[in-house]
Length: 43
Image 1 (cartoon, rainbow, N blue to C red):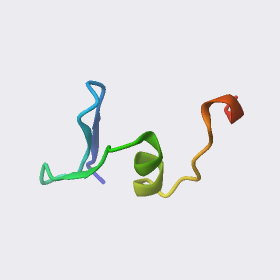
Image 2 (tube, rainbow, N blue to C red):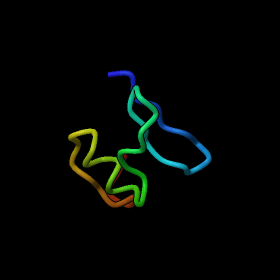
Image 3 (cartoon, rainbow, N blue to C red):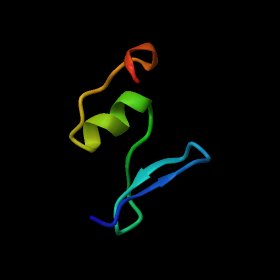
Image 4 (cartoon, one colour):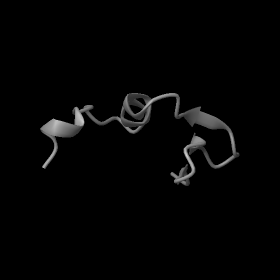
């Protein structure tokens, strides 16, 4: 995949420049197929 995540908070975009996630941190994890963990649960 040629997805891009921008540090300015604008979100996660696919190779066509379409925004596919970014309303929340959890939505980005979900789009990437990862289980979301609360910040205090992360190592």
